[in-house]
Length: 242
Image 1 (spheres, rainbow, N blue to C red):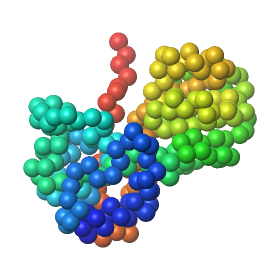
Image 2: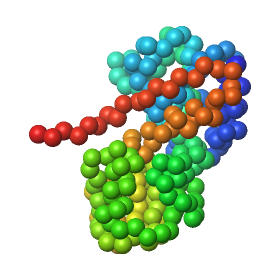
Image 3: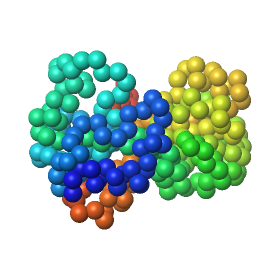
Image 4: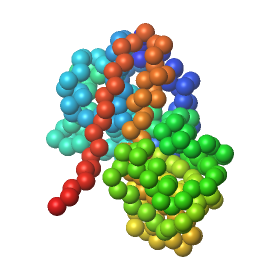
């Protein structure tokens, strides 16, 4: 398949036009007329992936390598060092970020991984209504996301409604009408604001909530005449007990 055909398939699956205005989903590096026979799917691209894959491979990732203003290409620094390696190996890169959050990732993780029933869905937020105890909810999150600990803002012994956003969703809290909001990368001032709103929040981790990107896209690509390889990105954080 040529890159344009794959791009068109992905655009139909999860339209790039849905991405947020600050995002950079779509073709990052490549030539739409280039032939592609092998695809690598990953949450993020790194140096090891580039070096251990063949020439001409297409990477489809969740997080755009070029994000925000890139005013120069200094090949000794990130992300220019990876851009140079991709170009030298004639490799291509497509990102599916906030468009894929809306069409696939949020609902998949909320339903399939965490086991909640969606009672309402906004573009970036899934909601569920029910009855959960504080202790049982945290135990479920730890088990389903393989977490050893959780950062929690506020505490409600009984929770009747849950909101959920993968990645960094704290900026969406004004749109959340729920007892508890699950998301990643909750900052200090986000926590202060949540407390003022009587909103319980649980930081489930950015990586931990999005690492299912590969398995979702792998299922969608199975019918294409391509060799699809899943490359599991590493979590840049680790828990250190001293």
